[in-house]
Length: 497
Image 1 (tube, rainbow, N blue to C red):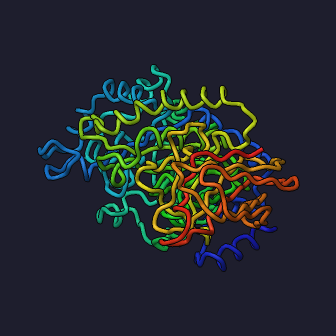
Image 2: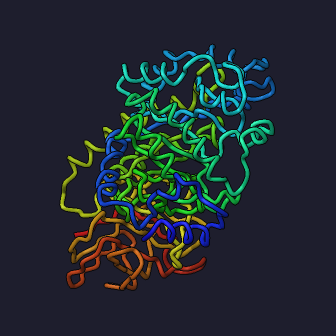
C-alpha cells in the first residue's frame, strides 16, 4: 500500500482533512509487523504473575478542594498537596495491601500534572511549578515501591488538559483531535517516558477514543504515543483505553500494538476464557473497590476478591483494583484492610486446590447463576456472591439463584474435557424435580446430554455417553413456581467425571 493510498483511506474512514508528514509515513494496522505481535505477547506477562495491582487517582480537582472528601477540609494549592504526599507511608500501605504493582495518575483533564515537564510548560506557556508540580512524585514512588518489590505503572491521557480553557486555547485542542496536537502531546509523553525509563513498567493511556467525544483517534496517531513510551522503556506494557461498555462482561482488543487490554469495567464479573485476546494482548480488567472511581467503601468482600483473582490468574488474566487516596498519600482504611486479606486468602485457595485433586473436573472451577435464557442472575444473599461455592468441596457453601424460580448453574472447566457423569448435590433438600444437563465447547452452542425427572431430594446423578466440553449447565426446569413438589434449587456441589 502506498503512502498516498494510506492517506486517502485514513481520510475517508476517519474524516481527517489532512495528515502531517510524520503521520503519513506511519504504518496502518495491516502493516503492523509480526515482530510487534511477538513482542506484545510477552511484555505484560509480569502483570499476570503479580496476581493483582492497585490503581490510585491522585487528581488536583479532588485533593486541592476543601469541600472534597479527598482533602482534610483545607484548601491547598497543587504544590502544597504534592509536597505533603508521604511516599514511604504510601509504599508501606501498598505492601500491606498485597499490591503486585501500582498504577498512578500523572494528570486527568485539568492543567495540573503530578511531576515536572519542561515540554508541557513550554507548549502551554507555564512557568515551572505553575501547572506541573515541582516535586517529581512518580520518581520517588518508583524508588520506594521498588524497595518493596512492587512495580510502578503510570496513567496518562490522550486528551491532555482538555477541561482547562486556557490550555485548550493555547494548545489548539479540539475534536476530532488534530494530528499536530497529537505530535506535540507525544513529545510531552516522551519527556516523562525517557526520564523514568525502566523504573516505570507500564502505561495505561486513557482518552484514546475513536468515537466517544468525537476524538477520532486512529492507529497512526496512537502509534506516536506507543513510540514515545518505547523511547524510555522498550519493554513497557502499554494499553490504550477505548471503552465500549463498562457494564457488560466483554473485554475486547483495541490496538494491535498494545500489550494488554485497558479493560475498564464497573464490576468484578468478567472472567477470561483465555489469558490472551485474539490479537495477542494480555487479558486485563481495571475496576474499582469503592462506590465509584477513587471513592471510599468496599463493594466486594475479601473472600470473593481472592476467588476472583484466583480464577482470573488461573486463566491467564490480570487485574487492577482502584482504591481511594487522600491528599497526603493516605489510603482509605477499609479498602486497604480488605486487600490485606486477599493475598493470604489467595495462597490458601491455591493450596486447597492443590490438595483436593480428587478427580472432579469441576473442582475449584468458576460457577455462576444464569436464567434459563442464559442471562446472569444474582445469587441469594446467603451465598455471599462467591464463585466457588459449588466447586470448593465445602458442604457449608452453596449457590442458589435469585429473582427466578427456575435457574441454571454454569461451570467453566477451563479447557475442553472428556466426561461421562455429572452429580449434583443439593443443599438442605433444596432440589429440582426435573433437571437438564447441557454442555458446550465454546459457551455459545449448547447440546443437551441428559434430562432427569423425579429427582432425589439430596443428589441427582446423570450418566451419559462420553461428552467433550468446556462448559456445563445444570438447569432446574421444575419446580418453576410455588405449590409444586420440590424447592427452588440450591447446589452445594457439582461433580464432573
